[in-house]
Length: 255
Image (cartoon, rainbow, N blue to C red; front, top):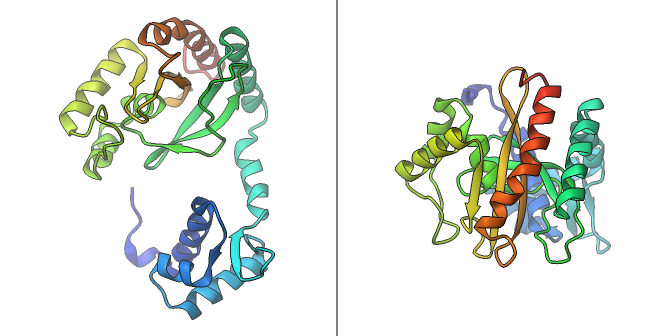
């Protein structure tokens, strides 16, 4: 459900937009770059940056002329990612997967228009795909994203489809018909595969985790296509399905 425009604060939205820009930039940004990014004049951008700086959400680089995200955000994310016993159960399940497969195991959740990695357990393979906590992946062409989509309410799925399905590789599913058929297949078989749909040289496999009310997350394994053949993806289904089913039982999603 979207909030009516009359109830939104444009100042708050711009402040959040600035923090997203700084988080995604990969380098410090100048006032002019921030102003251009939020479509505002430099004085407005500067006032907002100084306000965020004073609150601890933004910091200046050594030159004192460019801006980065502040460390106060870490305090917020700590509370978000640390859910006590649930977090411990997820961590233990991911560690079991990594120990059995030597691959890095990922636990991702749905967030509006993306699949977000919230926990992981690193494997021992030297040639691997290195996703980080907080990384966002597209819903329509990543294995975890497709699993999350497959169990969403149909109205939410159609809203996401209506926003567009951008192409990441030649194998990305970019038409509503292709994606709807893929989601039906995932629900029928209980898992999703990304066969070089997000990156040209990567394959992934993912399964859902359920809680008392609905599907809540996805467990996935990703790797370079040179190692992650389709046959290997099916071999990896056993360990991640066992872990996902165990978590679902503990969360009350399976009898």
